[in-house]
Length: 410
Image (cartoon, one colour):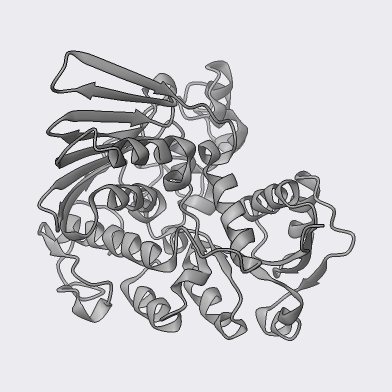
């Protein structure tokens, strides 16, 4: 018989509910024991949506009350809003329990330092939600590199052309910059993590961003259902439904052409690594349908490997022979199979069978890179990554220099 796995969840929104449903399928003796969330009704509705048995779940409105019972669980999932990840992780550090921590692990340099200090020597107990680097597709890419097929690597081109970008501009829980920390932290944190796993230690970064499409002069509190242009707008639920766009599931949403839109809709960064190789990364939020792509081209002396999570394809071009090898790895699970891998690892960490494959150090480094990329956009400069200790970053948390363009605050 498998060992029982008792878990508590802090912040039971859509994402955390999905993770719980995966654990329920993966582990025969899994039990969701406690839910910590000020909105019990919302938590119950999410559990019901994912068909999770919640008859014996106990609910707490605050972490302080839960801590009195934390000895009854083997691990904690933190799925609260992004700006609360650091605070909640620190709040439960004295339990000594393994934590599944949603990304980004921090939304400011100060939070990075706080989290690093809180979990010094305990980084291996935290499983950061970096599913891309744990997918079967990326694991195969790592295998191919490990076989020595590429030879010396000198460059990585990485991209994320997001086909559901309107979600970040029209859906209230994503649209709030004060909660999300911006689209570098929301999206690039995954990509920087897997690039680091290819190239090693990043030492400096520069970046730029622009908003050329979204935003405008419409009222910030305008919803599609109240707009006179709903029948002609290409961002309306009606248009999404007519064109077969999955964004139709958003339903009624806030206007993406509103005055309060501050997110970029395109961004690019250039990263130098300790090895001497460099990477460039771009993100774009206006792509749709087959324009979607997320992956990279890794160039070495002997061969080039390219891969894309949307096509499930890896291509290996041999530089020494006129040949190309293609590998198809299909997986329909969440985040292309990465969520399943993460949850299996988390369960093993909770049961003392393994350590984290995506530990806190990887989360802190990626968050530091995202925040540095954002600063580089505003400062129009290179930033030395060097250390995830915020006191060693060359720029203050709130620099006096304003962005040359009207984009998200720093």
